[in-house]
Length: 487
Image (cartoon, rainbow, N blue to C red; front, side, top):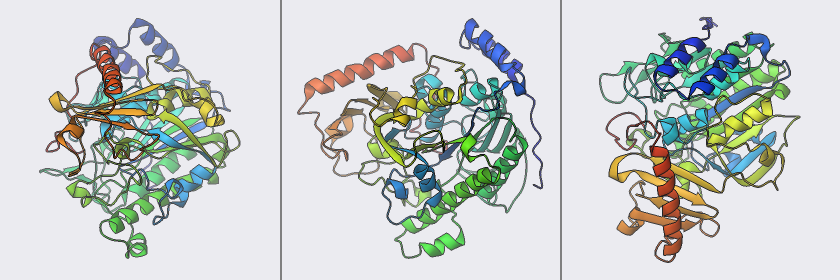
């Protein structure tokens, strides 16, 4: 590579002091973190698997061939599924970017991770509180080399950026999106350049960002192939601006607008995932590497996304919405030779589950047991294993119109429904929307009036959960202020 990757020294002592001053997780956790975090890098067992966590951005629930798409080519993502386990009821932590990522990396519901709305896309502002314990910190404490490659959008201050959140190495943009060639963040002026390596701004104009991500990750893997590594590979695709390769624009020229633009960008994304996995194969690391794949939230219908292009298939809703199309998304795990291959699982699982699941599969210790995720290792191995979740909760936005949802079994209740303009939604529908997903996965029929007892029960589940969490949860900005930070 033209720009070698300087490895950052571990900032574990600085992080621990900062957590103590801000309240942290308590003395016992601090002591455990110090003892684990100060372990030498070669303390990891050599046979522990590597982990690559691939996150796409604004990818629709049905926008992969293995999830039903007929008009898209996604051989790399399909290949992960063919060599792994695909979930049909996989839920993200939130229908919007930053809280979805906060839940993924901490194993905690976004409210408890301190971020129910989007983080700032400029230096300063609000991000995920520094005292949160991330997956990267968990792996680094176990002796793994850790890297963030791609999009961050969890904070733009020194103690909230990747190198202070457990990553030895960081490359990418700190805000919500960038132009893939100029690496500028476009939202409201002035436009800002946003490309960083280990906290320092770098300039490489004209280079396609996803190609740079693959190069950076490849170099990191080559440098650390003799020890276990964890890579958080967070793509800025197919999030707007849609900037697909010319060959894919030509391939999809007959699709209707804006599906043609979205499809070209998604296949460009899939091609880079394929290039990353080819590098894993070239290094003879595939059977030593767990690959996890998911989308952060549903497809966008924002103006900057040409008002659409993605698809939720049979589901209702999209990005920002707690209908299934906003949160029920592609989720896959693969570890050839160790986990089942080419299988699907219908059990309910959640993005917060990756942290304890990977800890179990890799034989590493959780640094924080106070999480909402549950290990789904048994579900991955067996289609007959029960889901670890009886109830799931979501909360996004703030104020009187904060949107929430609770799922218990097949019943799901949404409060303060937010969705793209839909003339079929009445005022009553927007207040409380009850559906039975076993009989109506598309959430077309509001059953709230027919089942007031179920509405009361689920409303109480939500109210009790919210009251318990808000006694300890940090404050967070609203994700529904669409005129502000990028969504």
